[in-house]
Image (cartoon, rainbow, N blue to C red; front, side, top):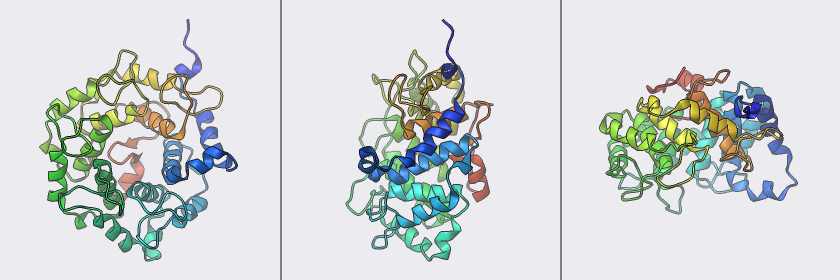
Length: 330
């Protein structure tokens, strides 16, 4: 049996239409139940469009207005939706959106930048970890978001680097991976955030990259997909978490790129567009973005280059002057 088009080609026009239509479903229950993810969702959709070479699909002025409408005047930082409390996850997405739209200057012009930087720095604990918000949950995801946000804002010099790096290293495990906090199980998503934060902080030399690379390449299953940890199912999003980490430690050749590309493409919806976590499941903008970003790292033709450290178009990162070294297939 011959493979179908959606198993061999990235259906860019369909994916563009899928993302464009997401914000038109304002009357649906799902739209209102996902306001806590709205800022992240806008970032995921915009990033995928940028990588596919269709950034104009989402209006720049509307995007900037939406971001600014989510500013939390009381705490500083950005919420996921207007009148939501600020959180570092939505704050990073807001900064990334502004960066992609060459609009970071609005933070300075509106007198928000220093308040924003203070909010981010206030999230670091004495141990070097980071909280997500004022309520105190700690996670290496929040550490990465804070470090990445400060780098994008050009304020990385304000961070206590040693305290931050020391905490990341304490979250490392005997298998070479990293967990969400000290003593937690290694997970591909946590590996990405720890490796990327170390990359931004120019401290990757403190990692045993061969041991880490071995743990990462073992995430590939027989069907080509990657999983998050041993004995788990494959998932398109790990095409980003695993690949980006391998790219930053320059071990991309340790996985079968052809089989992984085929797996990502097989998870596309050939009728409605979008990419799912695995074939025949319902698509969403999260997996669409990370599937497209993974294909970019694999050198898929027609896609713009993505930076594995920041999950932003490489041209955006280069313009900001914060690029770190990495490997990309061509």
